[in-house]
Image 1 (cartoon, helix red, strand yellow):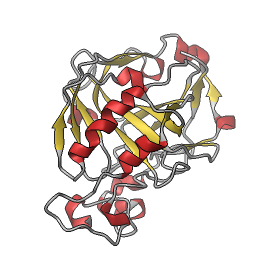
Image 2 (cartoon, rainbow, N blue to C red; image 1 turned 30 degrees about the horizontal axis):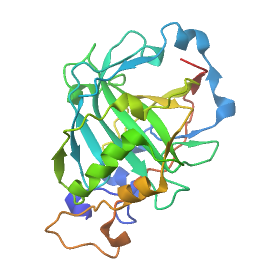
Image 3 (spheres, rainbow, N blue to C red; image 1 turned 60 degrees about the horizontal axis):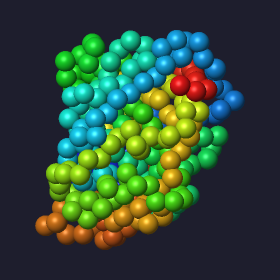
Image 4 (tube, rainbow, N blue to C red; image 1 turned 90 degrees about the vertical axis):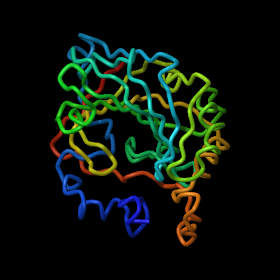
Length: 274
């Protein structure tokens, strides 16, 4: 598989090997990190002078893709918006959103909070349209991308997430794509309660691990069901006409998370509420 996707999450092509092919993975601004809540600097004035705000038309979600290591929804960024908070006056628009999960409900998130992992983590990836012309250009700049991170905890069925879960059997194998015909509203995948977020400067958590991301991690999680997570775990990391690499979890997409890396001398800030 390493030759196909060039990287993955198994022992042979997993996070500890990425640096061989992607030198940026060894940088000092890498993500994810363990959020040590006692280290978070309260920054209410700076972060709330212009509160974080977002807008996502329900029609923004266009297609669901299985790239072989997660599920991803590609969006039409027109009309989407993320601004304020640590992003100040720059306007970012939504490029795509995707998810990370584990083999069990006790792990799967990329970021951890005081050493505690969640069952999964949803990432909404935005790019800075104020300063850059394309996503690719923004992805190379230190202030080019902003990612909203949402922790998933096992509980009741999540209605909006269920629209995605119901489509996943149509993209069970790598490189399969399905058009989204029923509106999936990204804002309904965010926590309803406004009890704040943590923010720090980091990187993409998948190769090439560009150090271009302002991370905004919601303190409040959303609940998804065990059944919904199991549907995620049914995705396959090989194409329909490839042989199953059955020695590795029967070719299933699981444990697709990068372990936390040192925060180093970066500042972790928190905002109590929006």
